[in-house]
Image 1 (cartoon, rainbow, N blue to C red):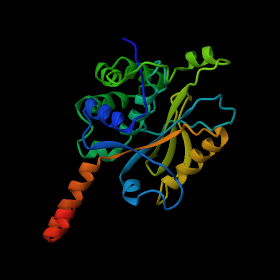
Image 2 (image 1 turned 30 degrees about the vertical axis):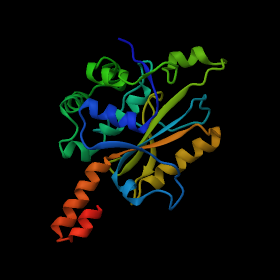
Image 3 (image 1 turned 180 degrees about the vertical axis):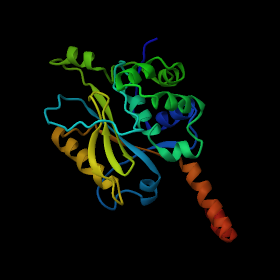
Length: 249
């Protein structure tokens, strides 16, 4: 069965993640990366960022590194799987989700499968043939071309169609990586330090400036608002917060 094209809507992506079986994860749009424009609570809750942009041939040389042990990286070998693959790049590498038992049975099994030394191309093929993931993706089909695989990209060069691509940015084991399924491997951006957003930000902003694309979208894959509010409520109750505080929350 083929994969359909889907739209980059935060609510749609949140429901897609729920349909795969992952708990307490949502997707929110990030309107600006400028200092002071991002809610500190959202930054703290973010597992990874997805940048959607209008694809153009990348003439800039990027340094590809070998995958460190435990990093989930899959090449995009299935047409139209780009959006879901970027989401998976974050979910499968977010240690907090797995430690809290919120990854779900299907992705937990897939994570164990990927940890068995499977190469990135085979992982891409495995994503394409995974019934639950594909069906969750196809449930949000849109009628027009939105993403593509490398072969499709070659066919569209020189034509007027607009082709979009999704890239993930994640912190992993103290480092920050850019994960692009059209690349042969991950791109190391640097040491995560105290705020990994500050490491990912220059790479995202450089891409924005290079392409001057006003249609680009930046999304946070994060702990869901409901889960964050429930945890805040529990903390207030545990600290003896008054009824007004609890009511306001």
